[in-house]
Length: 242
Image (cartoon, rainbow, N blue to C red; front, top):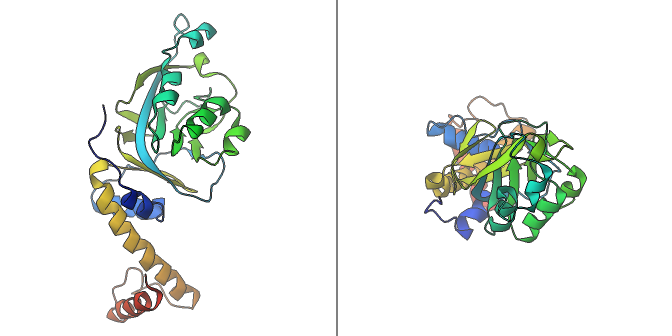
């Protein structure tokens, strides 16, 4: 199940320059309140913003008769297949039911994912070998380090279906944006307009921060309800090319 939307390079580049905070505000303006993936943090902060369409993996609670260690010999094991089929430039998003008592992946699988060209990985469960994952250039977001194998608590059951990740609904093809604060889910049909709006928001907030650092008061500036501040912003944009 894939979205018909294809993230353009232009929109990807715009989103790489905006923050999760700006995206959250833009989505809230459209009535979307629950697009932040709760409880996940970067394994290691990266100098780049993660942007890519979602490719999903769903876990269910493991049942002992179905998940002995020998299931990893199965060449169609869903966890392994997800790593080998996640398209280049996409983000592997894993639904572990917010259960971080066991890992949803480790450094070998995530290294393979990175080498295949994925844009990132997000899981609301645990991760093992966190240091190895943190050393990769590819951004990765998990709930916390957790040594036990996924088989002790999780069974990988579905690939590229609608999932919940950190209490946010994620549909295949949605655009995932991650920075140092966490991860936002942008519905695919809104991605282009969110990118355009947030580009303007980032410009305005840079102007506001400059004004605040120069001693300006917030009232009438943020939001810009005073005409004088709108004039100053227009002059600032002309001066800075923003």
